[in-house]
Image 1 (tube, rainbow, N blue to C red):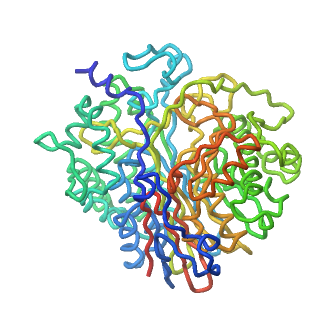
Image 2 (cartoon, rainbow, N blue to C red):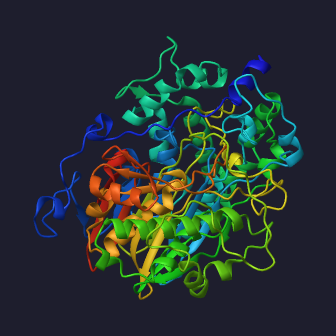
Image 3 (cartoon, helix red, strand yellow):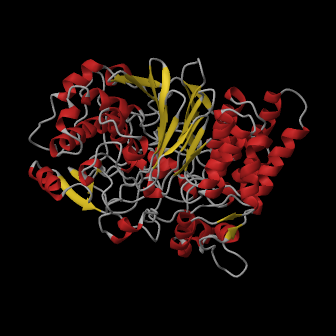
Length: 615
């Protein structure tokens, strides 16, 4: 039994699945939805999803269950953080295709009249996770020398400590107003049973063969007849519902202040029955995570990083995420008249792609957990550094190399980047604005399917350990207690000190380049949020992947087919290795909330059927 469990837990990653509109699935172009395509004035353009506007509050997320959970808290008098925590917990129940309770989550919070703060709900490497352990691990039967990641892409050996739950509890305690029982009520109800979504059902059925090897997954996801839930069928999660109810009961039985009661819930998870069962199950089945690893974990409050662009302040989490890469992108692009180039013209796309590649090169070399490595962040985020880096952009030629900046005192080894690519699953997003102007922007992720379920807890282990490297001397090298440098990257944008946009997205390494394009669409080209998220996008792969094989793909750029063929041909003539993909095939799918004078306006990307609602 133990050997079969280990085989299941260390299986290779399977292909990324996206729920796309029919046009993307068929490979045909969708009807035009852009002003220049339909020949009508800006503001009269059609969008696939209708615009959503409200005057009081708004919640965006991955499905209607998530947004409704958030709206319930707002309608009951909670603030944006109460609503955001409720939405994240609901996502952990209904979006297990891309995120569940054992995952991780960076979070930005902007309370009215106060600066933006960051919550690091990102788990850490276990004590037993060392370079020597992973360099000496045997090649498993399903792996080949060319496809064996340094750290497994899936399974129990890829597990960090669960970080999301302590992150949302810390946020609730510090910034919220409600109890855990209140914010968890929608998620508990959903765990009792919810109609299975398309993407959840399709992911389950795609991964069925692998999950059948895993007794814990079979017990959790398959019914007594050996079948998986289909679209619209009620899916019940009694183990998860029991765990969450037990935490709510502990809170209600604990005497003392609100903080004391919330801390009792955190202790139940991290130092009580949940941690004990997760640790024991891991050790029994060959994992590295122990009870002590989980008990030692604490989410933290951090200071955000920011830059300015066209009078806006772009705010991101720190260098333990890839968030600052967007700040570098904006600094690089500040030297160009992007509006004059025209939206998605060959000239515009070339410059934005090249700037993106330069920023990613710095990410790949210099980013890591600042608690373990000295990060040259003042240099990386300076306008002067960007001005020097900008000189590397040749307007007539695409670069084919990773070109990080040369910073004195830093001589950092890199992966060879030549391994075969392994696709991964990823992430969801939650954004909330309340009637007081408080803002919550999060990128929850991890514990995605095919999941390893931790005994009878109803909680899936995450696999984010694969984002660490086994290269001595690199800032992101694996070390016990270290956070992987995650791709997760929520965003809040301010103007004159007040929030004007909250935006986040799934999409692995693609997150910040997708968000960059959406933000430019709004700030530079004056698009509405819905127009901005629906606009056709590019996706460069010319960086070292944050997952599994850490491969580098020189010059590759994917263009959605709604971008004209002539543009693709021009980019090819500049040296870009262009692949024209489906009309709606970009792997990111943001939600964005624009905060105006008395009006909130939302955008929800149809690429993954994002959802947004407001009052």
